[in-house]
Length: 637
Image (cartoon, rainbow, N blue to C red; front, side, top):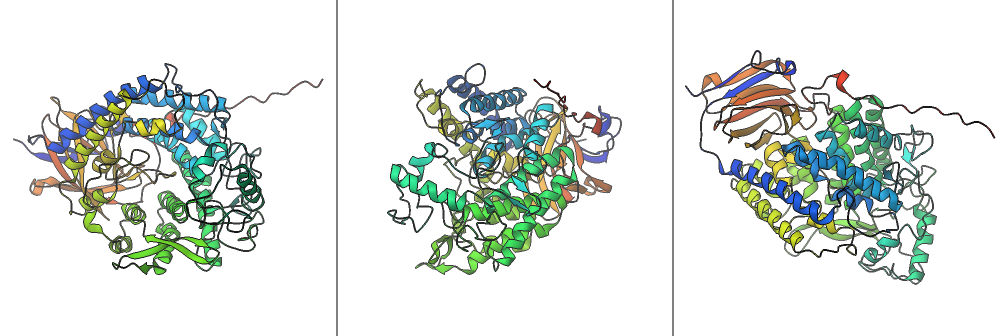
């Protein structure tokens, strides 16, 4: 008899850690769904594409085939980004070879860019938290892929010490003033004076942005044009940056809360949690003092605008330059989600919400009736009116499941176009979040197969680009490998886990579910997963085992175990297919016969579990102990 059952997992568990988990068993044979087949076509194609990429661009020792000299602050983040999806791919279920490559490529990129002079003790010597954030995504994904790694635990704690005030040699953060000391920071400490060499590789890029200041003599203030490549202009801008921008705090530094959250997920040390909340609350207080708009520059004395003649706008990566609202709203959202994860308290999302709403309150209507919101603030007031950023409210709702955030999405224009499957891969190998949102809202039923087919085509296109690329890439720009990287995981994360990869400039990944099997992360080979719907108190998900053998895997509530399961119902299985758990459970075990499929409603209590990186098999004694360095006393001459 083919049926589904839910029991308490006992004798059938081969590992003691699984014996107290609820067990869901499925034996109902069903035709392989097209989406499940396509998921593993994509997985296999990407595994093969990795070899093509590595053979073309990477030496046997893992270093990139590139130039022998690279100046300035920029570059290390881009090199890490070229491989950041490798550990994520492994954590989804790719072969163990991807984990080995992840370790190799992190070590090799860190070594190579240390030799270039951009890293010190494996961390960026100096840069801002837009680029720190991008480069750290590789680090964060390693927590999901290999939480037992002593090397990555050690790195994480060393890096976090740079930003929590505990490293006595490097003081990027002032705990008394609750502020970062410079927008440019890193393992070299706050960069309070920029050199001409620091910006050397970015000058040509910044030629196409507006000037960072409105009052520089001989430099007209116009959009998308500033002659950074001209030496006279460059000297003038650099002097103004050192006078007005180099010291003090900016909202972009809120992205550093992800690094502290990452350290908490390894250790559970409450001081990381407390520092995240403390720093976010400091910016909330500054916003209240500024009449509800977050200021973009805090002087070294802790006073809003003290280096900007009292202006709350005009700081580094602030309301005026270079991106405007993008690098203001996004860090508040990243930090708010981090604080929610660590505390379960939804009040931490209010800073991001308030800034989105404040901009919307300032909207104007274009000739077609579409609301346009200001993206920048100049000395003359709000400016650069454009349609509201449509990603932020969707990211926000995906973690909050809040009705107010649904209302923020509802006010966005042109949603009739959201179901269109993207054909262009965005920076960081992302695909648009809007079609997925429509899918889990029940508005885009064709999305799973369509996005997987689009991803398969994108991987094939990148493989062809790699094969046809010039053999000598030593003269290519720093983004060359990112643009060719054939590992595109966004659709798999959306469909298998029920979420999005992360906010790109330094967020952690937040999803409804995650999986483990056979002592490692990810789904077993040929097991497809599809999260169909997401609600405040449950998800609906289906699985299919396409292999010739039965399989066993574990479902986790949330990416970090932050959601606890309270009940499970096997849909379409009659009265015997449901169960309320006597106590909340972080994990559920699933057994599927060969060729069997199952569809589940999993009730969950969101943000009630303690988040961490542990796997179902890790106990406290299994966590690696950090190596302590000897204290050497040198003989006096």
